[in-house]
Amino acid sequence: MDRACRLRRVLGGGAALLAAGLAYALWVRFTGLALPCPIRAATGLLCPGCGVTRMCLALLRGDWGAAWEANPVLLILLPVLGLLAVRMILRYVREGRLAGPRWENALCWALAALLIAWGVVRNLPLTH
Image (cartoon, rainbow, N blue to C red; front, side, top):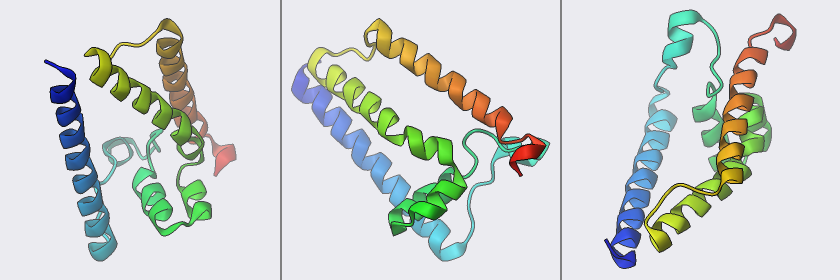
C-alpha cells in the first residue's frame, strides 16, 4: 500500500470518527442519554475513563472547569495523547507502520499505568 492510499485510509477513518463523535455529542446534548460505564454499572466504582463524555461535551462548550471536574487526569493527558496519536498517524502514512521507538512505547506503558493508578485513587474515600 502506498502513501496516498494510507493517507486516504487515515482521512476516511478520521472523518468517520469525527462524524460519530459529533453525532454522539448531539445525541447526548439533546436527549440527555449517554452510554453508561459498564465498570461503574457492575461495581459502582469509577473507572479511569468515567466522565469522558461530560469532559468532551464541556470542552466543546469551552467550559474548562466542568471538563476538569469530569476527569482531571485525562484532561491533563489530552495534549500528550494527541501528540502520540499524531506521531503514530504520520508514521503510518509515511512508513506504513504503527510501532514507534522504544521511548514512545515506554511512554505509552507509563500512561497506561498512570491511568490505572488514577482509577484506584479516584475511588478512595479521601477523594470524594
